[in-house]
Length: 391
Image (cartoon, rainbow, N blue to C red):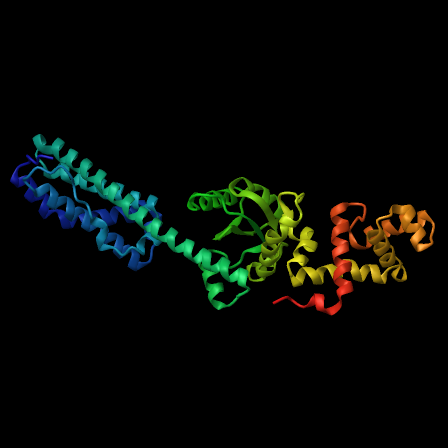
């Protein structure tokens, strides 16, 4: 810009800089409730920013040389932490107020012939200050996003390892997870290519559903921890399009983040074991993979098989259900053949099959359910050795 205003006008504007700064602060107090609600320290910093902007404008306005670019580093006076107390929208309110005061007062200081030029100078300078504000907030958001991603990864790692200590609690609180309830873990396969866009899409999907989400990439797996989950399968289906082909396993829902290790370990174990069930649905609950998880040495899965299958069969009908399940699975002779083996009427076999389903939730006429019960029986026959986690 070629500054052609008279030296007298520039001098008057320079002398009025201090008054302009005070007038801008008074105008902000009158116009903006958010400014009045700030702490005294932050109000002081905002006042310094306003004064720095006015001083910088005066120095630029006084210059005689042509300037193709305007340097408006007026935010260097305030700490970057101020961006956490004042939003970008509030900063724009600050810029509008200060520019309005400067434009009004500068018009009274300039001669009628120079008023238009002074107004154009204010408008051009305000544009550059607005760009500077956007740059400051963009840098702050980028730094905060990188820091939050590191915190997020640390929290997910701690959940998987079951390290619900004070450090995890403080990190979770920093991410806004201090009071999140109804937590479930979803584990899927990592897509090829850059993972940054995938993480962004997963977070956006969760926000649209009104859910909290923590995500971390663990090699071939994407571990997603959902909060405020009413239906974990619905959460998994919403995340499904952003994950690679392969197993998508949902862990059980737990009360809060500090109990999420159980859900995470079940989902990770299920993701590892899922290929043993080629026909597994997507998504699939980790509890539907108990047999496959037991095959890879998942001790909680083996204990769950004993509790959900063997104990009810042993305690029902004096062990007749366990005997019937073993005969049905071992011989594969159907109703008639099983009846001959047990020396009972075929209708008795049918009645007991129904009793097995009622007692355990597993239907022996379904291939996958039958395989799960067969695995439970095999582990039972192996004895205590099967309930020791392999090295």
